[in-house]
Image (cartoon, rainbow, N blue to C red; front, side, top):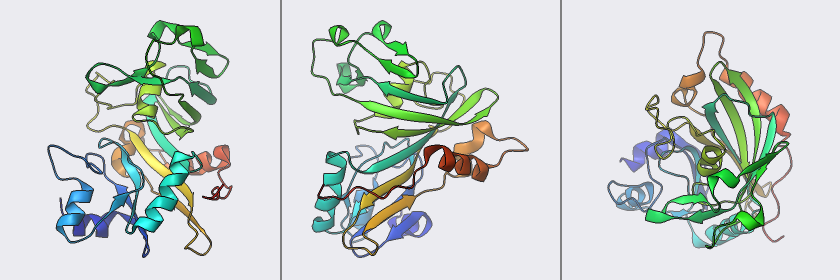
Length: 262
């Protein structure tokens, strides 16, 4: 991986404290065992990066790095306190999802360190537009409360495009939540067994954080998905800009990021 190329082609914003990238799918943020990741590539070029958060290797889109530890602490605290505003886009098979929904399913870690719902699949219930399990159905293991909100922003024949807000920030949260309610993300190597896509159609689209060193004191970031993300819903009349504008209207995502000291 060429860090100079990645910086030039994928940079969303950069200042003295941070750099945000629109990461292609298939590149690891850090901790890669079998290939060079972004942190290692930057280090080889003489730059030290501190990941503020992480997105999966298979996921494209926004990923934020601090270039100095003071900013890293201020930003990571917002993720820990769940005050960072995050919006993802995903493409799933069309099959009865509502216009809006809440997936309120705790996660646990099972065999081979795989993330799963902390209850038997058959105990998952749907009441209106909310998926949940009863406390009495939880497995006898450590579990982590996990909530994902979603909004349907586009239907295209066999596929649906969702905008998702992970209220909590657990590992693989969106991927596991959608798969366990019967709507795996297209191309997800963990859950989509159709082999019909050459990438996972999950994209980190927006990120909002307080940034006291900036004027105004916030980071409001957006990474436009590339053509490879939209491929399953592409048609002659297809307009990605119209879909994202519709997402804007439905989400009403205009509030300022929460203050990091809150």
